[in-house]
Image (cartoon, rainbow, N blue to C red; front, side):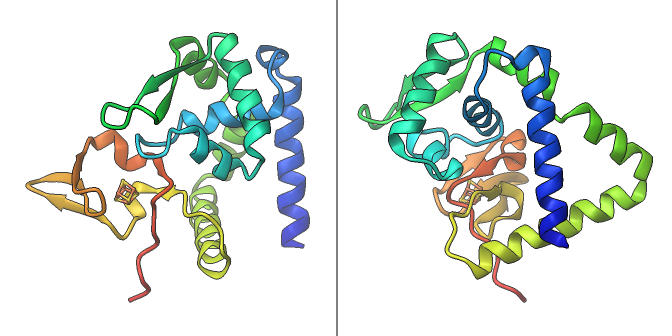
Length: 184
Ligand code: SF4
């Protein structure tokens, strides 16, 4: 039953994106890469991280990233410390596109109609995801503020793993290094 519900919701979402007039020029995988890059932090915006997040082959992701670059939706920026490594940055048109199509209108409307129940549901789905990540060998990719390395130092957010300060907006982003706190 749970699987049927998740599958139906995924299917509705896929169809909604496929039929959106602003997305006729984008393949589903290209949109998925854009959505990930719009939500990930600076440790997670590499081609390898996109590949791991989407669970696809390097070649497939590489082709999609090239296509996004040629459409002017993505630029590559060399890492300041390691010149062999690149970061993938969304361009302003890509950000504007994501702002226009996410989250899907039908989902926002339904959540609005559900009111407080939608907040409860979101918490339960987060619990489901955490449970799966703890029980299976899947890459972390969690929200920074829920990570066991997340700390507050001198009143600001701080990453205990990289030993770097985090900007307030970064704690709401997805990180490939995320680790779920041990249960108390
Ligand atoms: S605190 Fe965790 S999730 Fe946040 S940047 Fe550090 S490793 Fe990533």
